[in-house]
Length: 236
Image (cartoon, rainbow, N blue to C red; front, side):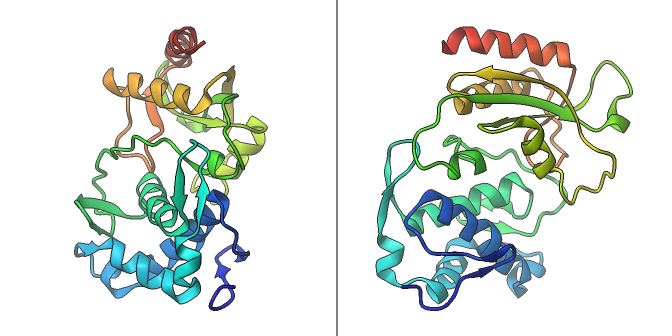
């Protein structure tokens, strides 16, 4: 039984020993509390792990924090280790916190570092109770960004309806026009395919490094389709 009710920015959260709980606790409670702290607002580097631990201790007992579950990638992990990982991953992917050096972070300075993520678990995988291999790779943009053959395009993955996923992502966006889904591809090993497509585009210099998150590219639909085709052949 948690020490006190868990209230997040999206409402009450029930404690469960799961990736889903760890994700939501991290994104909608811990990260929110961190951005409200004096350490964060100072703009100076701070140690992230002690802040995560202190916030988690307010809600979960040590026994609850150390309970283990099997993650979607098949590995056992404690609830606290999962919370700590999600805070770092989601915080960096959404440009909420900025990496400085090992263990140290700060308020984003406007110059986004390249996140070195090699685990590949995101919200889509966090929602699942078990391994997920099949899904969709999608590419979308906003109509006002289409000004030439190459323009800002976001590449992501989902295991549910593509239009629904894109709409959820764009809630609260500073751009008021509806997003335009350019194309989606049904793929096997969806998380691996997404990472590989994105990495190939990064290696060819098409990554838009100043965009929020790490999934925006200055590219064309034809180029994305070409890369997706190559990756699909290699991951069958």
